[in-house]
Amino acid sequence: MDYDEVAGAANQLSSAADSGPASEVPTVSSCGSRAAESLLSDDGHTFKRAWHAACDGTQQLATDAITAADTYRATEAAVSAAAQSAAATAEVIAESIPSHG
Image (spheres, helix red, strand yellow):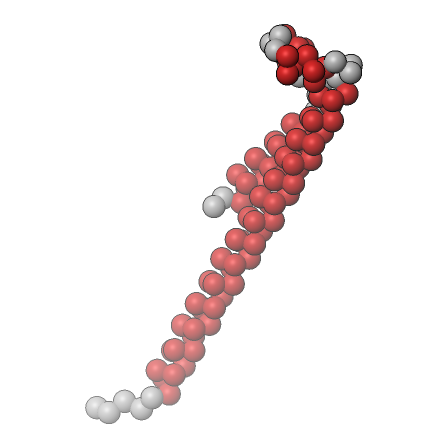
């Protein structure tokens, strides 16, 4: 897992979520479906509420992705430190055992 890639993707998700629904209304409207018409029938308020709910979910995904990457990085560092400590301990034990030769 590349932390910078995760953080970059999460930041892109956040930026997209913050951009708002204004540019999407014509696209939804032009498809001409009843679902689109019902979303826009109250001047786009229903659509905007749905957009903001989706954006909130996207923001949460971005936050969770960064948290997961941070946890992974911390775990990786802890495992590396534990392995080094175990190797150092094994070396000390090996040096303390008298050789019979």
